[in-house]
Length: 547
Image 1: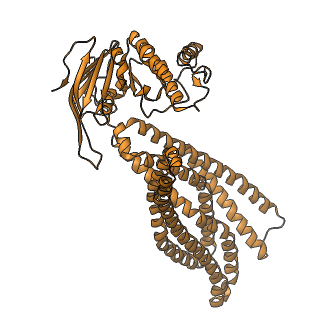
Image 2: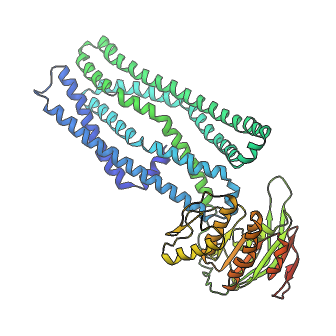
Image 3: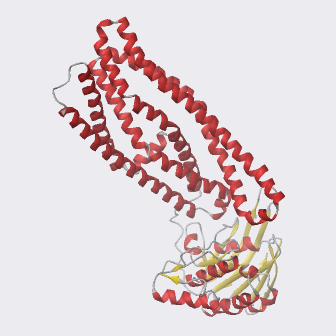
């Protein structure tokens, strides 16, 4: 919890400082209310209710300002946390994102940040109640030192017992968070395979009964165990506070009759503190959950940051200009999935030039997708190097290299914004591409945004092609784009879209099995067992392949 509080304070110091000051003021006002009530009940009150009314007004105003400032500061920091995570995610190598896993990343970006957001709304309440309790106890120490020592000892014992008893529930909450990753993975399978599961009731039952429900039950059991512990110790903590009040009210006067007035005044203050003490006990579990979630966020954030290399002054930035010449020189890549033997791609020597259409073909597992990812700069070679216009691509300049490409992957993501442009000229160009792909009756582009993305799989793939085309990058990659397209759109893709890109001087790489259209490529590279097994060149004559 300290780490979360420190992070919130570090990223919004001014708001938290002002909030803390107003919180102290509200605590003083609240404590003065308890004192005035106690004086009035013992016949020591001032005439009239003006001091009490003034204390109420100060308490209202200062607590409102405190809560609003702390809330805004906490929310601003949570936004910063999400921003930092999102930017870190985009900076790390794609292969590292795959290693962390979609389920874990989704849990971090959604569940954990939501828990932190919910808890951040409780921080003002925890702070103001804590300040109120301390000020009331401070007043008690000033007015009756001996009585305060006795109460402080009793409170110390109760707090120590609470802290010891809380270890078990806290461990259970940590276990809940660890188990949530597995549950999120099962949910991912359920959502991704919804179509297949609706066609196979037996498999659907297996996924639910053997996959989702065991994980859900385990999470539920751990959560119930944790919260049961918190319910018991929270109620015991509140009951112990009542016991302390009873000891002050009945025990101390029985031993020291002359301390009855002081005990009565202290009892009034303690009764006044029942609400803030109860609220602190109630909000402790969500604050603990937020602390655990923040630790998970920090863990993944550190894991991501470990793979963001600091810039090196030794590598000059890329100076990229058309025409492009992309080269893989003795490139090798080793891949292990943990269950099978390592799969090696390379060593590969390959050159791709502007104004050229290159087809990559080969069977499943032949290495063509890995080769494409190396060309895009999304995978880093284990050996060899990638060059653009004879400049080596390194970890420091790979971002500039990647931005030379536009791609439509087999598992593409369609974005609502075509690209970050909103001028009329762009919209007209988009409308022309929609017309060519016969999508003008389904979708419009206004201010650089598609009017709809709720389309069939084939139509969505066509929209992704439009978006990529309009990005106007020097190089393009299409991964099995035509696999689920009607014959007419296959023909348009191979005979019009690709040829238009070539005429515009683009370097075009296409992963394809459509042998009928191989004649429209300048070269066809066939991959087999991670190596270039054959190459047919229609235009460029060069010797490429394995070493």
